[in-house]
Length: 535
Image (tube, rainbow, N blue to C red):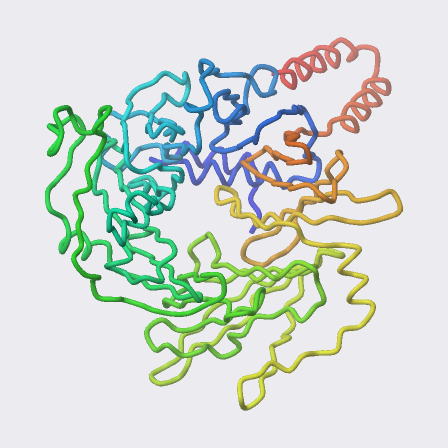
């Protein structure tokens, strides 16, 4: 049942201790009102990539920061870091802040911060609002760390180094192997070292190509599409030699841990690989875990854009678990587990989107993939009809005939990206329409549970075909970033405004029809309304 905004506001005053979710519901009602429109309020061009995250815009390789909510409602520069050499530039960054009113994790007084990984192997913690340096950690003089990502959201991060190769001098000296790469895990509240480990071919096999740590799992990738999962907790129990702490005495050096030039030593040394939790082969190591109950989804070898869904405990292919749009397209299909942690699957094709759910089977029965709804990009309608994939007795997919109308629809309207706005519980679908005037972008707000189209926003700037486009939606703001040729980048911001032109006309007509004795009162009310709207 749709609630009135005033009713939602009045409910905040009665027994609501933490009103963040309640405020999000109010904001959702405001965004979806018919007279609320998104208007372009700001644009900017740059020569470096533009990042939008946490209500902030980052330019010049993270060195210039703008807040999305400045004076007069337009972005305003918060800070600009001092100029540095190319050897000190920021390679990657992560924003460490929580949207909760009370931070439930143990943070020891730590404020929101921006973690930056520099090209000269420093991990720097900056104040999120002023850009001041709060802490510096030198990582290593042996490995070059270039990748920074979350291992567990708001808890630990993982740094990955580049791949190392055995130098010709070392090979001539008789050395036959060296560690492939290094992984470092840090906690963020407070910033401290957990473990540093080397990924060696002698331990994990000579065909190992890459490795990563995520959600408590050590993921090791091998040649031929092989992926093996290990428990990172088991890795620490079997291979951890000593504990590490920043600014403590360096075990093998004369300085402090995390200081130049010693950096942080390796404290995890495996003699042999731990027990394998899971092993599978897939195309381009495209493996995803998720669902309720646990399932995994992969692309079979040599088949891009073609997905299989398996049960994790029984290793059985789910019924209707072969995902294929069967529509002619240049770009392959995409599939991923829904970011709202509902266990559903989002399958994106060239001109339609399907949201699927997993139904567990009883006893020896296989789980089943069923469709919740389908969103078509041509007319943005929602379809709940069944169009399951037909399989032969050998497991092959029976392809349907592709008509010319289906191909033309794919050309006229295509889906570019799908995002999830968790605060408003909306599915954001960005599509591109082709007409006689060229390409134009459209951002559609769909209900996350039913797929119903709730609002549509047409982008004013032309959609360039050979450019990379990214759409970010944050509450009442839409940010469109573009990467063009010759390293030209653009940023366009839209903000929610209320269209009051019709209301003002109605007010003027009402004032003209009133008797003369009430004209003064009407003018006073009109001035009050104008002052209120300006605020």
